Length: 380
Ligand SMILES: *Cc1c(COP(=O)(O)O)cnc(C)c1O
Image (cartoon, rainbow, N blue to C red; front, side, top):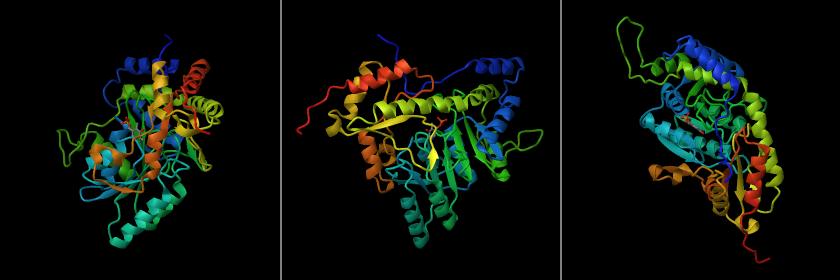
């Protein structure tokens, strides 16, 4: 049996060990410290934001992003249905309600026309959402031109969840630079990782200061423990930030590797009848975090699930694309704007192993296995 091929495993180099041991040797094990300061500075510089606050996860970053923007009970937030659950969950943490919006078929990200319509409708009925939470899906940025224009027209803040997209660009600008507040994740499956961690990015000093305060138990500057508001224990640890500093050095290499993986899949699978790789919008350059294919079962002669099973039998990990939030039991009864695009993607879409450490021979094995899926003969 050949070794298992994972979807997106951590890719650890030599610098990680060095930075981590240096942080240990310096005894900066206590939550905050110089590595955290340096990691925040480096990520902020890379993305082009004035302020960066290292937090315990991408999810914690989304929670505080919404909280410091004043989103709360009685509010709604526009969120893509086609996403990982964390952004929708974060909306509920602050007591607000997500209103789900469909994706655009040519980008798989939030459909700007649907968002604009929904905001116009909200303005007419006096019920504007408190925020739009845009998610850069599978490493491809949303179409920020029209999204930001619609938000500006109605004075609604845009939060960007760039958890999957660090290193991607939209019209030459970095993912993470588009929201009033933007968030990143350094979870183990992301393009760079701190094993677990996240970061909140903004150009607004007041918001950044408030996030730092809330993330450190909302302790007031007093010799004793003084609290005026409810806080959280959400800071990123200094040790994990040391890991992050090493990972960030390799970010451009990691992006290049994932784009190479994407190019190979595009060439060898994307031209097969009935297989289509996720489209790349002409407005930017994705970081190719995960490469996903959409299967046309009639043309290909096998379904998405047939391919998934064929891969699993060879110990190759693959996964259906995001199940839409409006189809999740936990969000039953939520409002959904549109829906056919993401429902269709979920029915036929599959994420393939896309890690930056995926070898050429392992990728060849994935491609061969996909193409070896038994086909039904079509009537034509
Ligand atoms: C991974 C991910 C998150 C959550 O990040 P964690 O660090 O795991 O909490 C949030 N949003 C999206 C789109 C993600 O892919």
